[in-house]
Length: 173
Figure 1: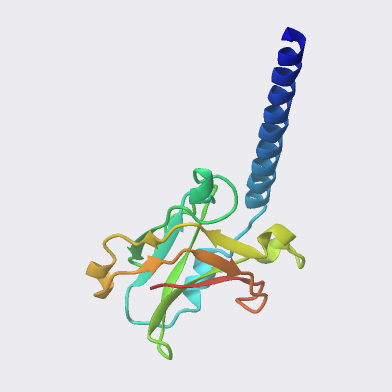
Figure 2: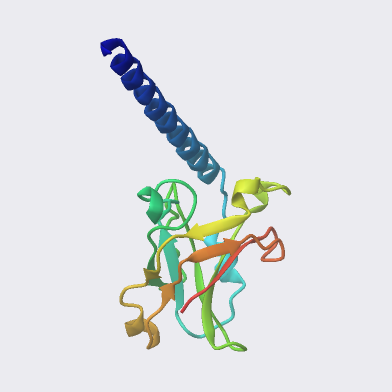
């Protein structure tokens, strides 16, 4: 009987161990893909904007998903701030930055996360969608533009027609 209990416990430990190993490998692969992302320089993006309004920059320190404690590939935390004197802040080493723009035709704000040509012509399949697990409110932005904005939770598809090298468009609510 003790032998049977021992075998059952050993089998259970083996299953849990294999499951944990699979989770770690999947998380590692997701983190590896986020390290391959190269975004268009903010100077290139802001140079094509014709506006008299202050340019509003969205920035994130790292790629990550709320469902994975901000690990993996996706957006987890985003901050905003206006750009003054045409001086863009330095990009975060493990994250990215882009511009929040207003579409006159739809009366909606949006942000394009644009890939750099350094990404190459073929993107990894893991980048076909950009996951945002939870709504991300842009705290305090209503003081700048007169209304609150939120990055809504969702799966944002890669669009090869954005910018010169493709990227993701997120319409803000």
